[in-house]
Length: 271
Ligand code: PAF
Image (cartoon, rainbow, N blue to C red; front, top):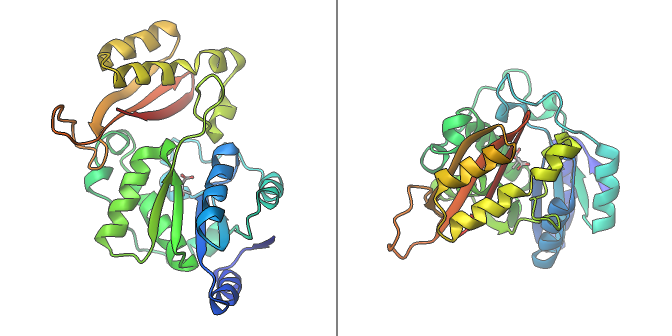
């Protein structure tokens, strides 16, 4: 498994595969890989001949007060996990490769990007959409895979691909969880032992909301258990993320973002 940095080297590798008629899957990541990312690689291997994994902690999707500087980074560990998982190529560009001097073009993400995370992190999905568009245009994959853990991100990317007619199929992959239900996330590394102990309650209460528990009541239960703040616990239309209309026959999704000490956790479940 090779590691490349520049778009030129990336394209040279991909051109070789393309000339042999091979299909390509892209798994975009910010590194600090866990079993959830490995599940994306496995899903990519099942549907394409070659799997490229990008590792890039994208500064434009973090606000100045967010955790860009302390976001976990372990490229050597990531590369060895990816080799073990059977990925074919790692693309780990520098910030200067992705945002060279004079970079000035941004995607404005509307629609599914506006509520929930969009209300609490207004800069976030514009940064995600811009970098994903650039990753896709550099790799030109047949398919790009994203975890359902970031459910709104998946909806925003599907919308961008549809709106801009990008020639790629977007494949969502179910969330991988610890045995106690906590969704795997690179940010779980921030949790203290005490926080880690109560963190699985998030999945428990949103599953209860999916079965009819009042979201406000679920939030109060989290606060009583030691969570510090609820950004939102809401039931939404699973495709548009507009407020869910019960009885509409449309798919629903419970989405939540909550704080445990200084760590912000997000999770979601189907109704
Ligand atoms: O989900 C992530 O890790 C990131 O938001 C992504 C899609 C790699 C874009 O930076």
